[in-house]
Image (tube, rainbow, N blue to C red):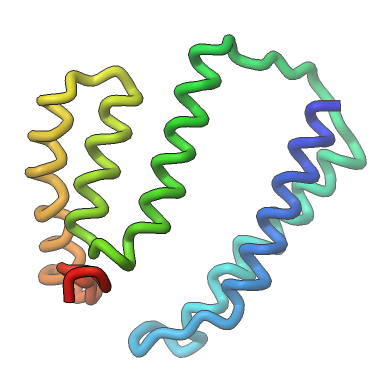
Length: 143
């Protein structure tokens, strides 16, 4: 039953991803536009997840409670990152992501903060300055 429930959940996420992503536009990109990517990913994901519902196989073993809590915390941090990326801007939101995931994965908090402080601006510089993908330094809340 768990395999079928996972198949239904993945199907719904893929369907929403495809539906909302198909109208995405950007001022840069390839000739087809960025709205094609969600369709290319979403349709096969829907087909494969539907196959889990129709043809379930294997036995599912759920992780123990501490591991499940860590997985849910990581998902919450990733959702928070997506939600705060616009208001905070790329470097600050990415700093929070790196620190949060580092702590959830069992890293020392001080090391996670140092890593976030180093990698967040480095990733911004890589994407914005080197690759030419415009990313906001400060988000909507700051300016």
